[in-house]
Length: 580
Image 1 (cartoon, one colour):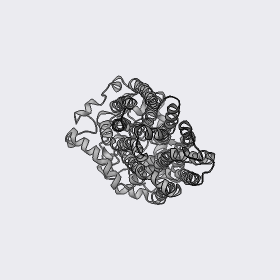
Image 2 (cartoon, rainbow, N blue to C red):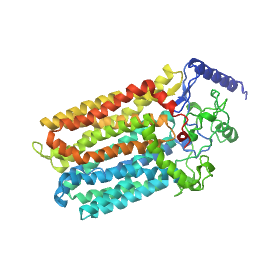
Image 3 (cartoon, rainbow, N blue to C red):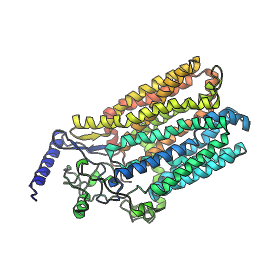
Image 4 (spheres, rainbow, N blue to C red):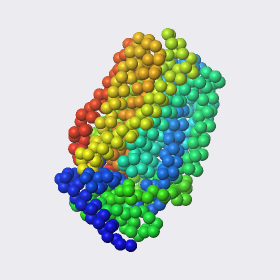
């Protein structure tokens, strides 16, 4: 068979890349900037970032079925594990009476779980980086089951508080593991929708949990809520054990000199040509990290596979289903990213513990993303904290189950965000890369997608605040206010965190630690003053303050990072954190 058509196609592709580089005057490829399109006149094929290897057990090469199974398993785990610790708001009045505690003391049952959820990730993420995602999520699932049993059996407030802390430790994995799994499984241009799914599953647990807890408490007993959660957590653990292979995968970094522009060539991951594919994979490049290959080591004739030539029909190996799939990483030096310079397992753990703090305070993009996510989530929290206070009192006088049912409005808004946030942000970014940047994708290109969700926050919080204060009909508060807040609580975090992960692709877990610390620390503080402030001064001031913080920081990020975000990324481009 003649090779001339393939040679001609290759020459055309070289010309296309040369055209891209010329049109963009040699684009400044730094972390967060990627050549995403290849083809004539700005590109019609999406470049795969990160570049997959030729191995069928590389998670990037898994079939769509296996990727769907893993992401679905993660979504169920996130939903179930977050529901138990953070879904007790309708039970507030019951706990006040049964344990003879004040409202702030009962809210501490929520706060203890919330603060533990955040800070336990200083252990969860390093363990997931060292041991793998699978063993960590299995251990956390087991801890959740045991904590649920304890909560169903408690007889005192102090015992209940201890059980809530343990519950938070087990549920901590839902704050960080799924974003890491998404980064393991999916290419850059596919992640927006899955990040939206993550936040939807997370907040759906917060929305549906109070509905379930209120209904069960009003019909049977509040203890049965924890027994139901135990059953659901047990089912999730079963599926994780048998249908959640390890997704962490070490890809070899490139080792050839930098400074030249990338070219694009085609190759197929085919079992018929393993040698060629392996040779090609040795030259792959990306702008992000060692797992996606260093830009500082890109080849002058690096190979970049596109969507048109990637065959995703792989599947997990048997080893990826073992209880400790990454056991070789315990012996530093046996993986592509672990070498003698790392020193020891302890040094690796200390690095992983310190890096979230460093990026939170030293990387402006991560700082802003954490604040944007934190305030958007706590906009929901301020309404959760005041649900029983408002709807359990005159003129509403709702029962426990009715208070829980108001959360359906949050869930409806979140469902709309699930269907819009990811596709909208991915679509805007890809369209701008194709039309105005000659196939070069900048991380900031997805940020304009925030605008409708910021508007939803402003409108929803304003309706809730004024409706609370002036006793508007519950339909206005719930159907309008709660639905809009549910919309923004998925949309803003999904886009903000996707932007941070696009900018620092090797740090999805660390970014989630930073964001979770901000979210949960602020939320923990709210339980001590928010209800008393609302009772003393009315609802307008406290609710609109949270609205102002959410909208203000979101708009600040749009004004600063759309024009100057790349400059902030340039300041941190030589950080060693890009090689984690």
